[in-house]
Amino acid sequence: MNKTEVFITTYNDPDYLNLVLAGYAHQSDKDFSICIADDGSCCSAGINSIKLQCNKGTKEFYGCLANLSVISKYSKILDINYVWHEDKGFRRSEILNKAVKSSVADWLIFTDGDCIPHENFVRDHRALASDTKIITGPRVDLSLKLTDRFTGTIHKRSSINTNKIDMNDFGNVRHTYQSASLMLALSIFKLCRKAEQMITVPFLAQTFEKLKNFSGPYGANMAMAKHHFVDIGGFNENYITYGGEDIDLLNRLVVTKKLKPLGHCGKAVIFHLFHEKRD
Image 1 (cartoon, rainbow, N blue to C red):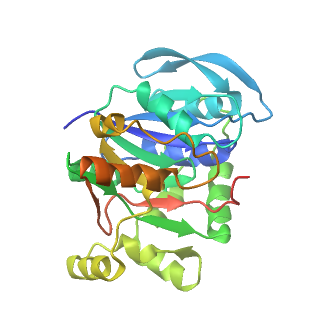
Image 2 (cartoon, helix red, strand yellow):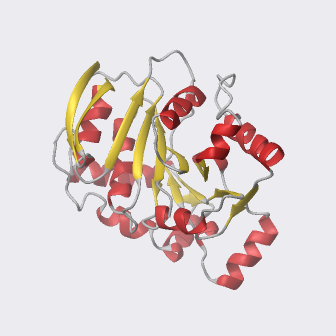
Image 3 (cartoon, rainbow, N blue to C red):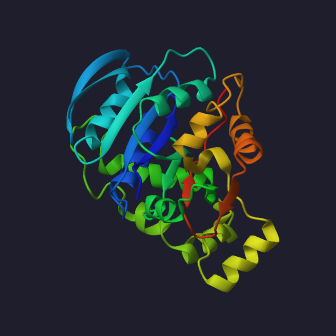
């Protein structure tokens, strides 16, 4: 299997980043690295450089100290890199291109700092990896009420200011998110959306995929070979307002590289935390 790196975009939300990294700390497949692509976060802690003791030696990072405090919790158990640039508006494409240039991975997984991964997220992406495909995965959207409930649970169990990670950080959040039947039940009460995309029973999953023409949420959950990404010039940096850059990338990969989007119910699932749209 080729080297795999997960690229996580973030902006001014260290609490959500803490939840997301807790999800990666509990992955069933540990053979991956992470790059946090920070689109200009500048929280109350300010901007500076710090040295972190990581699982592969000491690394020096420059950027948002609040996010770096979160990263320091996980840096000894996860292989984490961090890239940051000054906040000059929405420049997600630019920071992701910068992040990919810093990577030695062959297989790139793109997601966001408000998306908690299912414990088999990386395993599924690596199992589905294909040089002729763009792999996309389901995104289950959590309501404000459900997001508040689970983020509150995490915050009570562990402060983002500590340098130690409690391996129970995920707690009942982790166990709830893994259960398709429970998430489907919660969806009846409008506590989440798209829980049906977690279905793994073959007949039901295949039927749903055909009915919905399933292909995933793109930028929040897609993966591809690095050489294809590089060949088409990466993300289009002319996108400086929210949304569109992921669809543009996918379309260019389909037209120029003849790649085919491929997604499956119950494979490479993420859970999207509720939030207001970025200005």
